[in-house]
Image 1 (cartoon, rainbow, N blue to C red):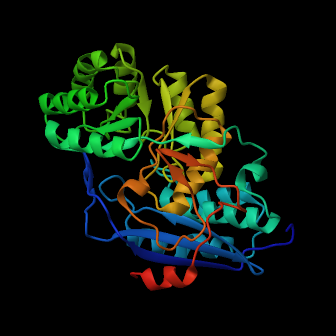
Image 2: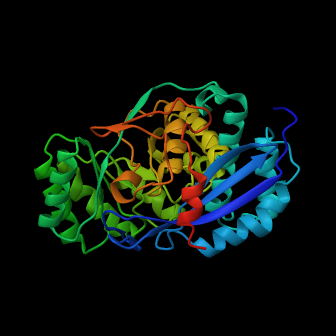
Length: 376
């Protein structure tokens, strides 16, 4: 395994079946009946291979299907051909030089797909799951939350009922899609439909600081456990002011592009909860650093995904299991899309996901199906 070097990187933009519609404050993420595109990446080294995934969601971030494919094929792949597979730290630094950060970390979704594929490859080469590769796995299963995204109280009540019918006992509510009064009515309807359930809200950067402070005070009596990303990602001053005024714990997602972002918010006393999200942070390498920093600084960790298919789902489960994240996490891919390319894969039962135990990610990919589904 020490002598393995990267010899090929392939991308496949696949069209996956969409089973439910989904929207955030920035716009539509998935439309039932319209295929959802995911970019799958296969990294090979001397006959061993691994798989990664990127989720292009222009309503959430700037990377598109076309930009992810071209970034990997024209920039990231040529930069790592011939590099030792085991040198994850060195490859991460190469990625930073190849696509520089700017105010973002520079094409995190594209970098994440290759990084995850390399982790999968390493685990397969050693015939161990990623948790064994890291020497860090604190739990064997993880509770998932059902995502509630709706325009009216009746609509979200139906969504909660559907989630409970599938065995889910925790809920994350998307807000910022409407005016303040409607947002409050939506969350109230969710709490009424699930009076004892863990419940948190996510505004996906939709609010101003004044609006967020008002909403936090209105939401506190509904038993909301966290107020996720109410402000624009780069509003550092607003975040500090909000955290001081909010009766709810403030969680950061889009603001945490890199571990150094978390360090800044910690220094400013401007964060209660750090959201771990593999793709947003450019892969597992940087995500582990962010999680470790949060743990060392006493910042609570929560987990989230990016409507991933089963490859991304497995990667997130390995990360969250490594740090023993005990609160329900937002890994919602199975709620909205199918992964027909996966044979052996993640097992879900009654809103809980078992952390895979097979080599690498623990997901077996049918490459013939991947090629059949390829849209580009």
